[in-house]
Image 1: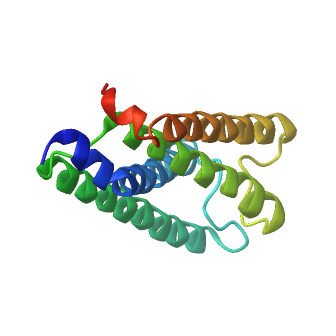
Image 2: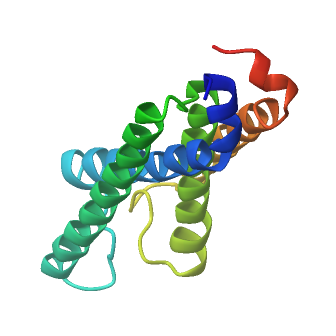
Length: 157
């Protein structure tokens, strides 16, 4: 089977492998930069620091499993000669953007599990956080639409 037919057959797997990797990557960056290096917040800030650190551990494990799951799917796609980087990258941006937007709206504002920072004027942080998420979602959707047609299968990047 040629590469074009393989890509056509595995369009959704390219998307989902990128989506999982994107969620894992966004969660990893959030956990590493904002939780561990800057100490701006924990995943769950409504209890003690110890509980916050445990919640960070579960959050970090979640990001790791999502990243590894996405990479296993990539390995399978490469073995089948069906990996499509442009479509995969669309899935990565969509997954990372949706994760970040969910975090910024549901977890930060509705559930109030944590905020980006405390004891500062939070509005600029919220705007930047959610605007970056929406930009990633928009670019991801654009790439997925561009790679979702039969015509796109004739053009490889």
